[in-house]
Image 1 (cartoon, rainbow, N blue to C red):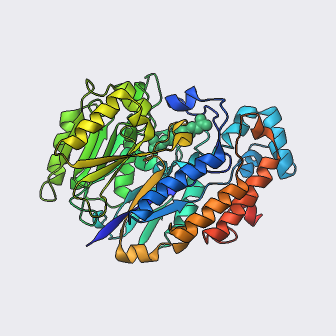
Image 2: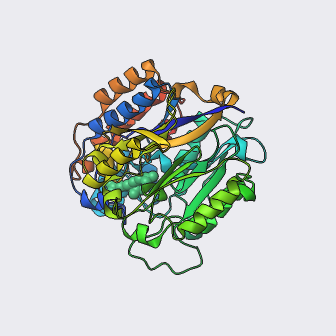
Image 3: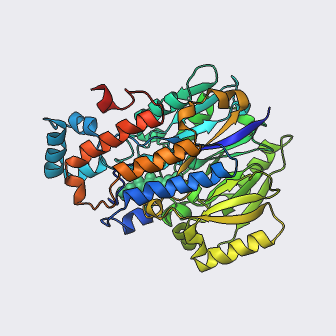
Length: 446
Ligand code: SUG
């Protein structure tokens, strides 16, 4: 069956800030306390998305989540009006309050794991919202994500949207950031590669946390109804995690039959590649592009985010396009590697650069900002049209961002109770622009 790959980007939310909340994410730690620019951040994301839409690719958006998340603070015992809850929380438990204000839902690659209908037993597209339980600020995303996915991909004929896996450390799941689908073409049955950092039943004593368990990967493959013969479950290397690759998509990206990855991405590289080769037998011939540490040291790969690029089949081009962060053009080793890559006759023919610096400073590159969803024609027709980017939506969202977003937001500014009202006014307006319904957000129901 023919199908396209659509990208759904997380819109940068009005509370985008640098709170240093993610242990093991070097950019988040480095920029903790800096002043963020929410308006510039959302406009950068919109510009990146528009490039894909202008090229003829299908591009959609996932809405920001309600932040500051007042229901989360009420659950912890803070009372009073919504403004009072925020003021009290910020005064008495500032760290908790900051965790309830993060705009981290922008990193849509962590929203869910997606299995296209060509891979699943019941022929429906399956998505599992991620529980993101490894970090406090992201652990509150799952339920709102599932709700957003259901509003955008209404079931049950075409889409099966699953709730997050059980909220227990054994099932720690970070969504598509640890999942790569390889295939001959988007609509053909593929091989789904799941990557985990730790086994739930081992002692993990590395420098940084491992955010995905093997048991979560197994559960996702089962609940999506995947054929075990076309599933590969591989271990991310401890060295990569300790160097700051808190998700596999910091060291690896795939598209079609191509897997582009750093030498240190997997604990057992040969075993992983062999497993992919045998799972792909009869479906397609995998193409491996392995980047040696001697050419791009793992530290450069992580600071520049070379692998957190979007690897795209570009309309009317024979070879793929790598939409890489600007920072890869500013890092000597990755710049040289990319020049060599396109000069060769491999599968990647062009490298483009995206400026998503506001997100990058929190450890989120172009690939973090998007959730890939392969859609057949019938599935595409069933998607809520209000979230699909066209000129009308681009103009409306640009206007909306300029009206509602602050130019700058420092950690001290977060305490301002006006932020609660401002972001609600913005999100309420967004539900009309994106046709999400007047009771989409908790505060709209309340
Ligand atoms: O989960 N950063 C995100 C970045 C996510 C990147 N996603 C992928 N690689 N797919 C994270 O660590 C930082 C927030 C702060 O510190 O304010 C943050 O959540």
